[in-house]
Length: 433
Image (tube, one colour):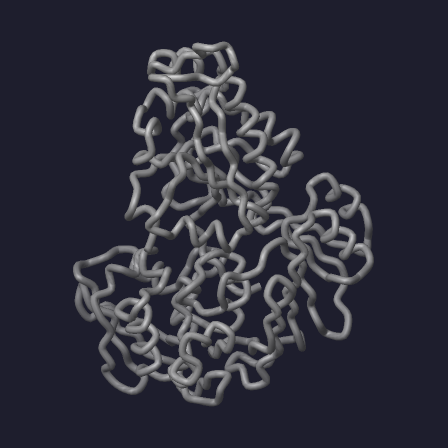
């Protein structure tokens, strides 16, 4: 269940990550690409993981009906064409002659099975909350024709259909493996699943019968290397060929080395602090405004992210996101510790005993906080700096640190005993590398 359905939530943007994937290439050997990344997938079942760590993998295994290219244009994938036969009925004409990795045929029945499983099964797919909940049903019109029905006309329905989470799965594989399907995924994509050693590696191999032609690589190996310095060392020694979330400070040296290629692009992810408005005193707008004024984002960018970020100064959306509109956040909430303390005092929080922690009605201002850990660029370090900055205005932050899989499950759980959380999110489409 999605946390936004359980608690009222507000956000204060901290930084916009400038390197969303942060890719640094070395050279491949033996036609195998070894990728180092900080965290493991939560699942390789498209139903159960909507984070990038899982999507990076299953986007190579499963394919949706249509794709969204770099020019933000829709392209055929498992569907060759589509049309709105009614305002609430989107018809797809499917590609013939495609088979799943287990040898079974792809057809309209597989499409219906995938959507029925995700929307009407138990549990429902994580992607159901990302816009797909508007889908009222799927009707098989013919073996290679299928209709997607919505409750009402829905403008972004094509955008929803292009999400990699909606990759079509093999009904036979799901029926064979049941709850263990996430360890035995089967799709129509360019790579087949080989093995998964949790928190170590996931191995994929080329799909010899891929409908777009055999991929150039024989294997892709996703390695889990949590420590940033170890990832960079592994690249230098040739143990891995590509690093996700590289060390910003080391990028200039790699850029000057002809053996490596550094790719940078403006990011679409916004790293933010979210307030649980159902957790007092976060229901007091003066406390929320005080926290916004107490955070020195420039210091975080300079000393923690080392130039690999830009301030979210004009919006809680990154400039490259569709629908972006500048809101002058810096002018509304400039870094101002005195203003933060003034607002907290107005809300009744006073340092009564001189220990530096504000109190009200005999209770200290203590905020249990759930930080991300290893999922985003130096996310835990950012949370630790925020903890220090809030302490300067009399707020005691209690960071409760868990590995990423546990954090994600807590974010989705009905029990959420935290005042704050740190996380990054965006509205981007993730395709296969």
